[in-house]
Length: 476
Image (tube, rainbow, N blue to C red; front, side, top):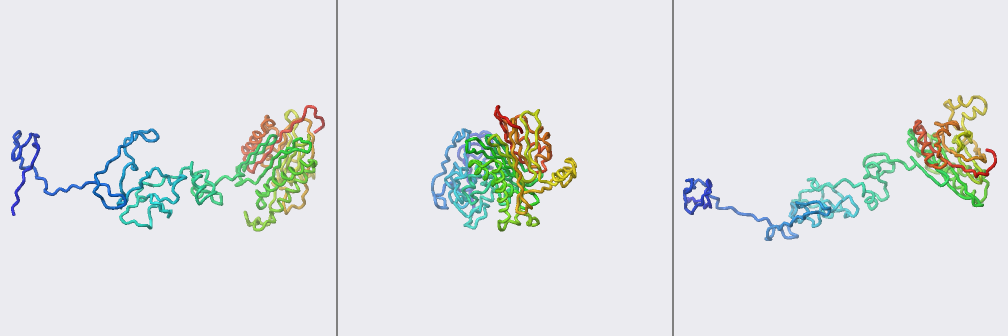
């Protein structure tokens, strides 16, 4: 069967664009051989792009897509000359309609996101956001594997609120990455960062007393504790209290011992002073109450091996030193080697140390076997001979009462500070001149002095400005 070649019906010459007429074999302008133009194929089907009917996977006979006009600006007044994906209707590779709400409008890491919502907007609450799902995947390419709609990193501004409503309610958020939760060991489950403990650095200021405690530069935790408070005597005059405790590191749970002692002593004073007990007797009773609180720690079942199984025979222990300003008197009490110093406001007057250490060095000096310089240079110098704890040989609380005749500053501290300012003169030189007006600043400076010196131990100091009326009399 022969085929007849159809002539191309062209509007113009392919060479010179001269208008042509039906049946021309050559261009009348340039003589171009029109028989060389290929004849278009007889079968050229055209496929229209249509939107499938909602709820079905097959195309319908609807007309072409009516593309919405792009807005000129968005909500942030930024020019938007092009369409966003959420602006246009469409279907996924399985023929299902895309969600009507814009995907970009949902943040799966923000509060208010649909609980258990899957990245593909289907509401799958399986919790698998990796794109590998056990559901129907026939003909459905995984968007999770394409990376087109990957979840953003948690927003540090909202992660704490998001955690509050989730399964990790009440969990602390890492201070480093601000997204991971902190486990029971104090480390971030996301980045592994060790979290600062609450007691690593503590500060407190009341009207007439301030205290600062710091972990120092060498210890892994702060085993010091303090308590400061104000109350009133029966006649309405004020009474100011400062208690400082230092946990014995060679014993078990020294941090708990110091905290228990400081709290018990402070509570005892707040109970006895307002009912009219003499401040010196109240201090003695407070030390006994602190001792009982530390002894009770050794009696708690299941706690002996908590920190170190090799120390379990050593009961929790700590030292204590305290000061009370009430009725024009300064009362001090102590057990161990923490100290109280007196620094006159008039620096031309001599300072003084108001306590004597319960330590090996102090015993050597008291017995006349060594002078002070030799005793404190010995490696046994800081071995304490008195402490609070169930294994203390004999509890001997020390108390003393003073009546200053001039204004000054009372410094209550652990050996973490006085190791770097041992004598009264050295301590007075380290105390800022305005500490009576700014006790918290003065305490911060003293802690900084110890850290600058090496910070080998925990450092705790409380400052109590002592004011004397102009007509005051008496000897220090």
